Length: 291
Image 1: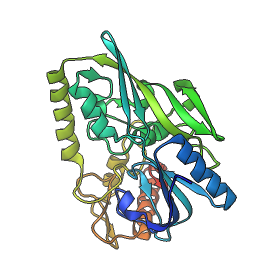
Image 2: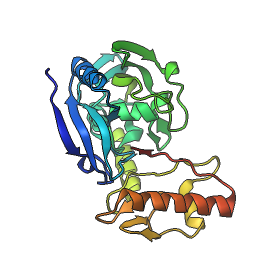
Image 3: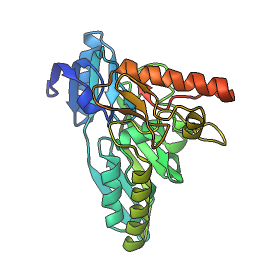
Image 4: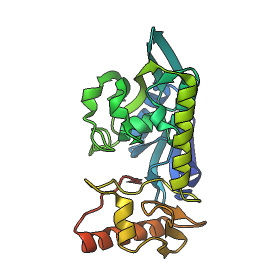
């Protein structure tokens, strides 16, 4: 077996919240064949599987996960120019922000809205990541997934993308098909103009991002408003439970002040939901996954 499966791997270090207990089993895979091996091992041992991306949109409970956590680590990038247009074939394990900067430095636009966006390409496709006027659905041409042990090519339409979701994220059975690679449509652009635009995005992101470990936005924005504004209007900025706090700088962030437990985070999530429902009659929907 070419893939190494280890036992009792702490998951907190793989999540941006820096929270979470151990995975009973854990493996990194760099090829589709290694993924197949790990999935076959899990099937033989009758254990559940969770596929972990960049850990930026995830809360792992302190009890950990009594199954196999799989990370797919293909970070390849193949650029195929065709005059003023190009396609970028990117491995699902590639970091979103770093890949975007790499493409922009070569004068290719299409993903520049994702400057500073945490996580991986695979995770971004899984959840239709988006910000600053762009999202994955708008630039993805096709993707390759491992489904039922076979590699399938999916057109964009098959993902049934919605606001911060896809058919993969909405799947009731796990693991859902696993994203192996994605292809994006790019256009030639002025490098300096791209750099300036991304500098502005970075500055705006920094101005809104609280200090400390967090997952970014906890809740999806309801129609015609934002979750952060609702939580702030409900008087919850700065609310603390244990070592977790609803951020003073942006109320749709919950920050780990150091040593927060998953229960601390979940208690603040429920507090925000209850208060916003009571004050405004709006039900907040989680953007973050809970493992």
